[in-house]
Structure formats: structure tokens, C-alpha cells
Image (cartoon, rainbow, N blue to C red; front, top):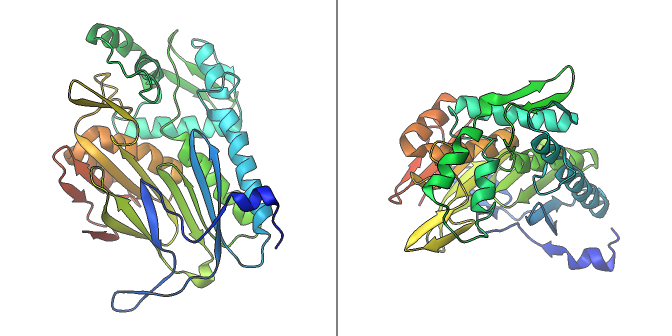
Length: 344
């Protein structure tokens, strides 16, 4: 297996680890509990994409891992150009700049926007992809470090309304119903891209892998050799894990007020806005969602964060194939009934 000098610099041997969650043990056997076994060799390729660190951890099974990783990163770049609100030429940006008129877009843009609207409907608007105008006011990542006035926030609230999104599959167009509305797919696009990257790796012969981008992760493995991944969930206030989740294959997505924030007057202001108020959501400090679909997991982690422990857990329990952990505003941890893992 040959590797260029540049590629070697981007490779870290071992298991993936990060602030949001980390893989504690990649290979296990279940027999009266968890018995750790030595995993086969893996390589972790790292790039900075989508405004975060992207890690592709691939297990050696004879495939050309260098080429597979490069193909994965190429797919991420391609989709980022389509879906990013930061790229003025992206489909997302064109829909925003032409608000009030239908815009012909790619099938990927149609799919992600449809997933975003579905999440908005199921969460009764706790997740809303039209929060873009408010995100600009605050600074997408809290980079302004200033708190806008209640008056300025209230002025933009009428522009936050997912029901004003019109998706025409036949014409392959998307339209925002009001001028000055802004589409922001940041809460769903990264999950979608992580899932698409996993599919590219599979076509390149990779049989076991972890795809991780910030708070979004997707893991998969060959069905002939299933050894559950143990993924650690980072405590949102302390430098320790609050628990573990066990996943054979699927998505794990985390959202929290510790990812991007600033403090002013003793108050923490973070990037997850409540579409109903226009201010940072205050009912949770961290949420982790486990689901098969990575785009869905991404959107739901934001929605549940906004909804808080009571309504958020009701939503999780009502959805098939979705489990989760919520850390409420007081630091208490709530796990769904079907959650596979443990809380420390």
C-alpha cells in the first residue's frame, strides 16, 4: 500500500477521537458484557473541510485506502460547494439570493432540503432551515461576539418559516416564499455529506470505517464481521466522558452549547438558535442522537436541543429507529428507553 509524503503527514494510526465524541474501542465481542479484542490495523486520514476537522478512519482489508480516502474527501468538497451557505455560488446561496423565485437546483440540494423540511415538520419548527437571517445577525459561529437587540431579532422573526419553502421535484426547483428569507442547511447538510462519503468509501472496497466531521459521525462495517463500535460521549462541561453508545452501523450526531459560543455579562451565547425566539436555545446543553440516516440524526440533534428534555425525549421516543441522550440545562442526563450504551 503506497502513500505519498503529503498523505503520510495526514495519517494518524489508531482510533478516531474528538471533543464531541470518540471511539473508545473499535472492535469488541459481546459475551456476558464487553470483552475488548485487538482490532486490525486502521489508518486515519485528516483534512479541514466544511469548517471543521474531517477524519476518515479506514480498516485495512486489502483495498487501496489512500485512493479511497482521496475519493471520500473529493466527494465532501463537491457536496460542500453545492450545500454550503458560505459559498456564494452554491445551490443554497442561490436559493437565498433569489428568494421569492423558484431556483433550479441539483438533486442533492432537493434531497437535503426535503430532509430539512421533514425534520422541521416532525419537530413542529424547533428545527427550521430558514433560520439563516437570524444566523447572519448573530454571526454564523458566534464570531461577532455581540448580542443583537431584541428589536433587531424580532424584526427578522417573520423571515423564519419553513412552511414558506416550496420544493418542486418535477421541475427540480426550490423557492423561498418571502423576499429576504435565508436558507441555512448547516444543521442537516453535514450529516448528509458524512453519509454520502461513507457510500463512496464502500464503492472503493472499504468494508469497515468511521467517517467523522465535527459533531457528526457515521460508522459502517462488513456484515460478515460485525463488531460493535463503542463511541464515547463527551461531557459538555467537564473534560471527561458522560457515557458510551454502542453502534453496529449508523449515524451518531451531537449538538451542544460548548461547540461555538461566547460569553458576555456572565451569559453563554451559542450558535444553536431557537427559531421561536431568535435567541440561543436554553433548555439543553448537549444532545446526542443515534439513527440510521445521518442527515436525519444531524437535524434531530439540533431540534431536540431546542425542544429540551421533556418535548425532545417525547419526539425521540415517537420516532422509529431513533435513540438519544439529552443533557438538560441543569446538567441532568436523560437517555431514551431503547438507548444502547451506558451513562457513567
